[in-house]
Amino acid sequence: MRCQVTSPYGITSALAYQYKRYRESLYRLNVSRRFGSWALPEWWYLRYLNHRFRDRIKSRDVGPVAPPELIKTEALMHANQLDDAAKPESYFGSGRRVAWTILSMLQECGADVTAMRSVLEFGCGSARVLRHFRHIEGLLLAGTDANPMPIEWDRKNLPRIEFSNNGLQPPLQYKDGSFDLIYAISVFTHIPLEWQGAWLDELCRVLRPGGYLLCTVHGECFFDLMLSDEDRLKLQREGNVTLDAKNPRASYSSRVLGSWDVFQTREEILKGFGRNFKLLCYGREAVGGKGGQDALALRKPVRP
Image 1 (cartoon, rainbow, N blue to C red):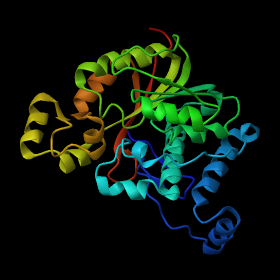
Image 2 (spheres, rainbow, N blue to C red):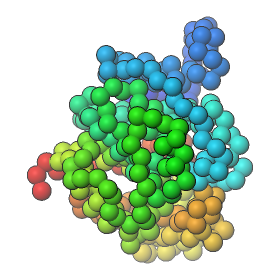
Image 3 (spheres, rainbow, N blue to C red):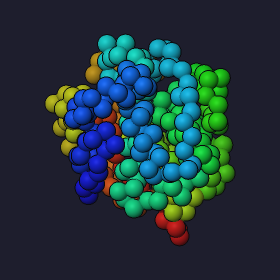
Image 4 (cartoon, rainbow, N blue to C red):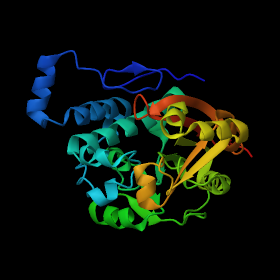
């Protein structure tokens, strides 16, 4: 399945979101002078929201950058990425790009994003992405995470979002059919396989009939980047490979958290995620630009 989209940042790709230089340098300079040197992505993101949601948009303070001790738990491959990830232009810009990716990918799959009234980020961390949905009025926002540290920080620093702490295994605290949209960015890449089925069942439970789930998984670029020849043979043979936190090839964030890096073949992913949901799109390197994670857009059937 191929999803073709056009980005508010002037990018056209098959869900491989890479920055291009803005063509109108004078226009860029004027926006920069008015909104600040790192605010261009903010301007373009708000422009997209205004076009899509119109009178429901209200510009809000994005809140503070999370402290480094939280950022280092959020899907960093290497320790030397921390300084750059903590810069406002990187932290806020990446959050806006992912928020836009979620909305535009669902649009391309036929979803009416303007009809959504409730959104859950599963594995929200410091709400780097979720905070950017606060610009949309009439949207109930919730974030949950197994790590209590970012949840405590979120509650103190990010109003207008309901935060909760979940266990490593289900359940969540929400009632059946609570959300129109659930997304999980770089979450199933770290959930052990023996727990994934239960979590997919649980997300299906709290999603309304006809609701959408968008989540990311490790694609082929990560197989080449993180797996040894022996690992890749095992992946071909068994359909999955897991690196624990003690493995020298594990990601930096997994080592910090004592977590796992989980790899599955496309066939295994389709089998597992297709059990409860209808697959709408499987975008290669969809989130994070070239070399990013693959993304699945799924829908809960209206009838069982």
